[in-house]
Length: 242
Ligand code: SF4
Image (cartoon, rainbow, N blue to C red; front, side, top):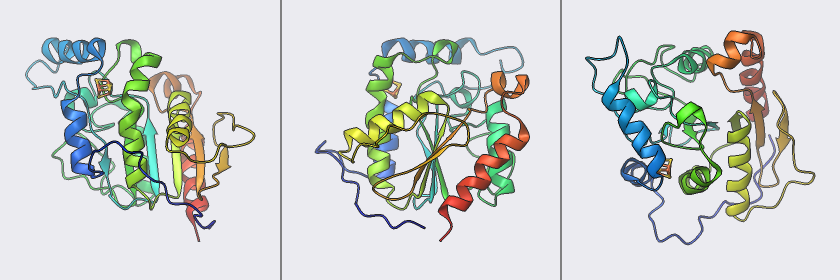
């Protein structure tokens, strides 16, 4: 395993770099009026089959092992997934794919993620996202992504044990690259291209690994198959091996 040559330092934000503090700040965030209104409206209206449930309806903080070797960065909460349950990737089809694979790899304590209090534990992975509020059509704007990147930066600065940064989709990939730059880390030359299964070594140590997002759009059309998905996690494990 490549040795880390540089410690990531948090820019001067005046904010305590602590996961519970980041989670508190995320949960209370109101920077994006469009996303806050949409998430709250989904939580109010709900949908057939969920009408009796209480939706989270707020920004969704990251969660997982505070000493991870794997950092998983998704796009944004699903309207009826983590916007409902309050935990990343929990309660929708994308989460079925993610937690099934994390369990197969021995990272998740269960393949099933149904609610924030289901007792599921991650060992070695931390899950976060480029945006923390559910966006209409799963499309946050550039301004909204810029607003939300501070939280990813703070997580990256704190999670120093990470060896593999796994971007689920191009938006997560771009968010990771921008977050690195804003942390003052050396530019990657040439700039890596997003491609499923591609891994780029990082000057600070570790790797940036890309995957198609396990969205229903990708998994139901065969753009992302079971074998491709497993292959990405097998590669992540291999990249992190000593
Ligand atoms: S998307 Fe991020 S920055 Fe925007 S309101 Fe939600 S938590 Fe705040």
